[in-house]
Length: 468
Image (cartoon, rainbow, N blue to C red; front, top):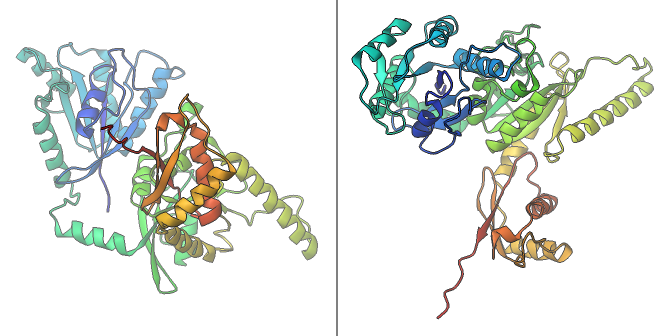
């Protein structure tokens, strides 16, 4: 089920982050009177009674500097968010006369947004605003402005109502629609697998190989897949829904700071998958983008497989002799595994598959790993087992303290699965050094497995008994 994307854009310091926080219902974005505080896009899923949507906050559109500056990076991020959006909120300060940057931003929207709906949001209408100031906003050529005070939520409900109405007109499925229930039940029946990674690593080719037909567009040009595509694959009586996603973008000569922003459509696909497969081009280096999208998968709590594609590409050192070729293959695989361990030290529990979309080598391992991870994500350890385990772990290595209070663990439980969550009840959270929770996680994995899935570890302070 496709979730719409709503992007907030505008010049610096017009109230974008304040509006974002009001819609999201919490102070997620950093707000400040200093212009340009939000330098990165913020991504958040909003659960609305009628229709859920992804909300994007962007850095300010500042046209006063050249593209080599931070402002140029912020403008580029905003442009990417505009291209990916289904609805755009263009925010202006109603108390400030329009200037050249406002008209440049409006021109950028006309160029990048195409036929997408644009809401001109006249913010800071909490005080008396002259009608002439509001009338001036029509000159932007983007339609009637919507009066709003993001700070005091004046006009907020009306704006959200109009936005939801527009999403319905764009034929996004609402929660009261029979299609919503059907799609939700359908997604629950399938094993949803998102193919994610940089452009041109072979995601579409891999799905075509699994389908055994040319369903998806495959091209050597990076970025051919512009949106997410679902493909149902049946294997040994089970159904797997493979979600092909647009690759991570790196248009032009972009600084390292931009690399950490994965495609918004890929993020949305990760949100609705059970297991994400990070596809790497084994003939290319592992980049910062690969690490960033892995971090997003972990934050989303999804299962993870690393897939080294294009393993059929020969190295110059490969020999023709079969025995020598096998030894070379083993050495090459060992070198690549060591490189993965170095680049992905934070996920040593992730399984790795070496494959080729061309030769279809090891493709069956994808289904095996997905099934195993889904089973691991449902694993629940009894409280008795956990506490026997934690007693031994503490005997081997007692809790390290970060304060004058001696750290104590009373007991541990696993209240949730998919992904697994462990709650550790302690005397005082601040008494524990952050490395001890990592120690416990490593020991849990050694004892109980949980291969291919992130696990949550939370310290909880046990309520103290009141003195009589």
